[in-house]
Amino acid sequence: MRGPWPGRLGLVALLGLLGGRAGLLVGLALVVYDAARSPSPRELLAGSVALLAAVPLAVLVQGLPTRATLGPDLAAGNPAAHLLAGTGLALLVLGVLRDVRDRAP
Image (cartoon, helix red, strand yellow):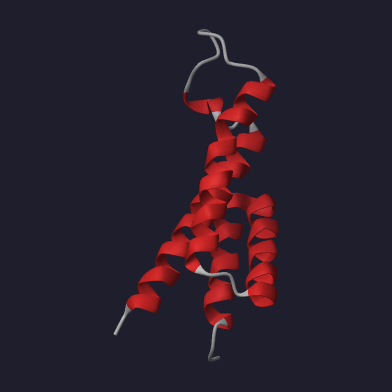
């Protein structure tokens, strides 16, 4: 296989492995978006910033945890924040990799 499709399939596989069904759906959505628009690195990074900035809002919407419920499983208890953070990180990595690739000689 040549072209962008091996990388896109790798992204879907990696997000599916790390994020389960939600990660697989996010990966498929990113691939469809990438194939349809071919976004610039700046657009990917701006999307990443927006998603990562929305994580605290998702936590506030669900309600701040009490001292008794504060722990390492806090992210598992808020799937919306977890999904926003994971998608934001995926866009960040994709944007940085694309920016480095575009600047390579």
